[in-house]
Length: 177
Image (tube, rainbow, N blue to C red; front, side, top):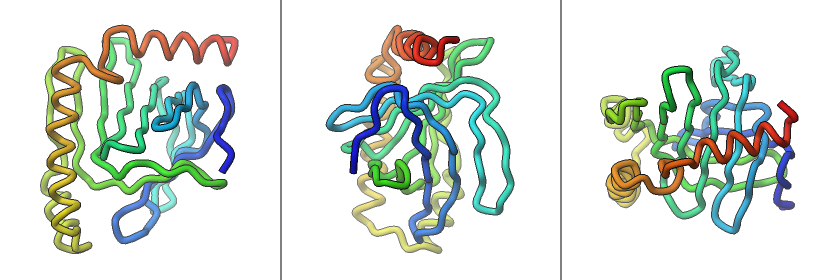
């Protein structure tokens, strides 16, 4: 697979553990690729749900995917500050079609004031039973919740000071906004 270049667009496809397509983002602009990560931006991007429902993202968001960690991070740039939506998910893979990952239901939302909330625990428990999540996957996900909370608490990766501003400025340069 050819690695997308800065300024090119990729689709993102989120799947569930059973292989069913969960959600698709049509055009995500790539801001940076490295051996282990992809940073991009969604800005009024068309999203299609598995049931066919469509909607458009309301604000620009910097997206971060990694090949080692079992989470991805969406930093939503809003008037009241940056909110983070963190999906517990498989590491991504990139093929000719899209950037793909498996969504494992659990999410952490971080509000502009720093408040954190673990979301969708009930959905995770239900899907874990229905789709038979393996014990090792459950363990990996719970360990990655700890890593993610550490990143949030210590300003690492996408939570580091200036991260969102740097990548949003780069997006504006590339898109001439």
